[in-house]
Image (cartoon, rainbow, N blue to C red; front, side, top):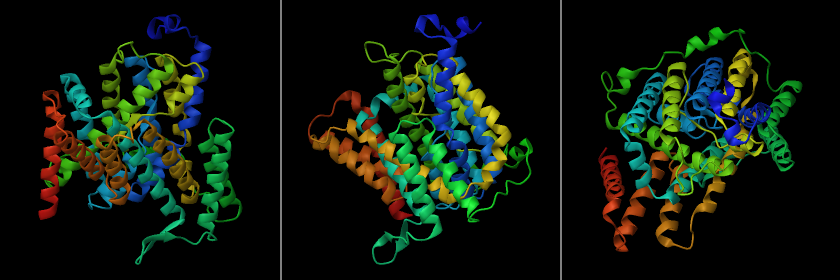
Length: 438
């Protein structure tokens, strides 16, 4: 049955290899079970419930990817999008987290419709590839900045906007310790380096009495605090007063998820040797369908947008070639459900360095940008710098796409096939005008 489902022989792999690859991928991305609740908890969401929802969304999403698309790609709530959910949507716009979950649900439904209709592929073709890399890097800087802020390494300053914090404070010291441990383990190629670093910093905090081990009630019942709490009517503007703002939130969830998935798919499938000679990715619709369903399911459970994880490349490096790898990852996440309530005991000083490290790895995407071409370099730079400095992924997207379209037009390189790019740029210009008058 396993051979028939995953076609192991055709990919030159075995059950043992796929299982080991799945365990490797799980260890490299298990930190999300701790970090995601830490971020969404700042939006007022119950931490234990978010931890359980994270395990459930990652588990079911990864299993879906394995069974539907037969790819060694694991899914989980996306870094960057969870920060956008908390700091821009909930804290910045003042929306209840239930309404924000409704927006995630609607973006997942829109994603599924666009995939089935084939429109998603048109959008992928319209967006310049350098901007995919720029968005990934910008989101990396965004979450690294949040990590530095939570650690107390960077603080607000009325004269200079930001300044160096007091590095002798316990929170900063613990965060730096965690950062050093993670960095050293990653340099030594230790699997699960980020997770180990979080646990070491948390252990020191517990030993010194800087944090308490108080996980609360143990049990899967914690999930009910966020499950099915999303407010879709408010997200549809049936009983709210946010209008264009909510439309923008759904748009960002949709587009960043699109960028994240395409970038991950290209990287992982290339590493696994699964890309066709013409550069196309087999069963792309199935991959995107699995991702869409996972995001819908995640919003119902109580977490932000679910995306494909670049950490899947670690499992591919261990020989993972089929969906069995993803299924193993999914099963391990479901087993982790039983420990989800204990995430409440992890102090913020232990999770902050994880944000910094993940952000650093995401910035590596800038290597794919042609910095010698001003028509590419300027839009990419504007995208990267605007995301953290305006605390908005939407602004970064807007600057990048508008600048790229404008420079393409001014250089006389516009082509009929670029019509969708210019439509998107026009919409972003209207957005800037709307924001200026608001």
